[in-house]
Amino acid sequence: MHLLSKSSITTTPFLLLIFFFYFSSISSASYSETCSGIVPFRQRADTISITDFGGVGDGKTLNTKAFRAAIYRIQHLKRRGGTVLYVPPGVFLTESFNLTSHMTLYLAAGAVIKATQRLRNWPLIAPLPSYGRGRELPGGRYISFIHGDGVRDVIIT
Image 1 (cartoon, helix red, strand yellow):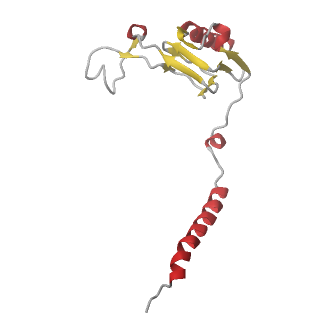
Image 2 (cartoon, helix red, strand yellow):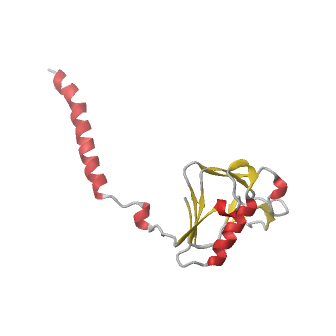
Image 3 (cartoon, helix red, strand yellow):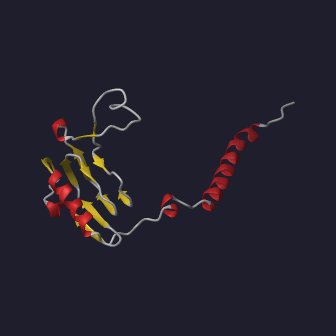
């Protein structure tokens, strides 16, 4: 005696699939919270463009002065709500630069911030006591490409 007929064997996977999709849609509908719901996105009061400071997105021109000047402006504007630094489409070659508080670094679709490969342009900073240079090897460490020390309210998108 066979417990399963041929039709029940072919129907069972189909019913399981319907059951799965039905209950997964119910559970996903009840959980609609996202990161943007947890941490509200801050709208910035002002927007400046890296091109306003001489930035060129050709992949060859070094844009370090433009990034540093734009961030210096944001730091000293101290606009209520902060400022957006807009990077338009293109490849912007630069050395390391420091972010400041209350800013958004906004890269448009097709925008790339590319690090220069010349090591002499990368400053050494004090080592962290927890790993790498400073613990096992004497000396400092290279600063991160896009750096922020003691900053708050910073968005990179």
